[in-house]
Image (cartoon, rainbow, N blue to C red; front, side, top):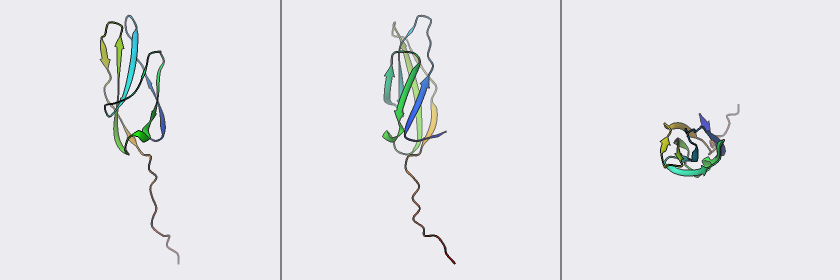
Length: 90
């Protein structure tokens, strides 16, 4: 999908004992960490250049075990298309 501006990202994570924290990454850069379910993030897509972006998340439990999502691809489009051509008039 194509996104722009602030984007809400919801992550589901579960563990047999409990999840300590969930972290969200955009192109490998940490976006934020949430320690309370439901795990929700407000990602400012303007922090990256327009184009393809890979989102991923990881969850850690109290014992230090880590789970990682598969990557999710989105397209960032924050720059408006500039129309520099004059209209044709006859």
